[in-house]
Amino acid sequence: MNELRVSVSPHLRGPRTTQNIMLDVLIALCPAFIASVILFGWRSILLTAVSAAACVACEYIWERLMKKPVTVGDLSAVVTGVLLAFNVPASMPVWELIVGDIVAIVCVKMLFGGIGCNFVNPALVGRVVMFFSFTGDMTNYQFPSVTAGRVDALSSATPLAAIRAGELNWDYFGRLLLGTHGGVLGETCAIALIAGGVYLCVRKVIKPIIPLAYLGSTLVFGWIFGSSQPVLAVFSGGLLLGAIFMATDYVTSPTTNLGKLVFGLGCGLLTAMMRTFASSAGAVTFSILLMNLVVPYINDLTAPKPFGGVEAK
Image (cartoon, rainbow, N blue to C red):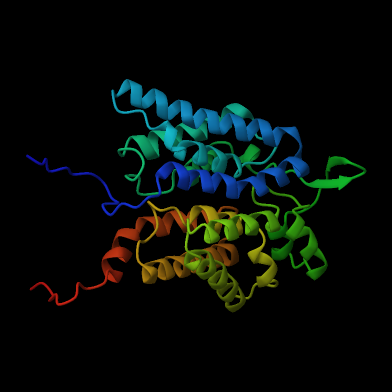
C-alpha cells in the first residue's frame, strides 16, 4: 500500500539536488571571495571560514539535539555562513560574527523547520541583528588600497556616503568595478559579483529576472528621487551582492516569472527610497527582508489559472 507523504515544497522534482545547487552558489561566490582576500588580506579567509563552520555546527548540533535527520551535507548552511561573512567588514570581531551565525541558523532557519521553511533570508536577519547589536564594529569599514603589493587602510568615505555628499564622479567608476574602496568583504568588487551572477544564470541556478528588475528599478527610481549618481549607486552599498545572491533565494522569493518581476521592482523601489530619504546603511538588507514578507501574497496574485479552471465562488 502506498503511503501518503506530505512534505514542504518543491513537490515537482528534477535531477538537480539541493547540494549541487548550493555548490554552484559557492562556486559563484569564489570570485568575490578571492577579491576580498586580495583587498582585505588574511582576515577575509578567517571570517569566511569561521562563519561557514559556525553555521554548519549550529545546524548539526540543533538537529542532533532535536533528533532530526542531519542535513548539513546539502551545503545550505555553508552558503549562509559565507554570505553572512560577506556582509561584515574585515575588522569584525570573530565572536560577534558567530552571534549572527547562531541567529541566522537557529532562530531563522531551524526554529521554523529547516531549509525550505524559513520565511525570510537567514543571512540578512543575522546581519540585521549584528548591525543593531554591534553597530560600531559593523560600520567600521576598511578602505583597501593595493599599492606596492600590500593593502593599507585609508580614511575616506564609502561610495554611498560620497554619492549623498555629491562628491562621487565617473572617475571613481573603475574603483567600484575593482573594489578598491571602503565596504564589507563581499560587496566591493563589482566585476567579481557580476561574474558570479553570470555563472549562476548560465548554470540555470537562478533566472536573471529578479537581479535585472532590482538593479534597473533602483537606477530608475534613484534618478526619479533625485540621486546625484544613480548609475554609480547601482555598483555601491552591497546592491549587487543582494540582488544576485540574496534576493534570488529560492525559499524567500516568488515562484512565478511575473512574481519575480514584481519582487525585483519592489526591492528596487524600497532601496531607492531608503537611500534617498532615510540615508539607511542597510537599505538593501531591509528592502529584501520587507519584500520577503509579502512573497506569499505575490505568489497568490501572480499564480497562473489552471487551463479550463474557473474562479472560486
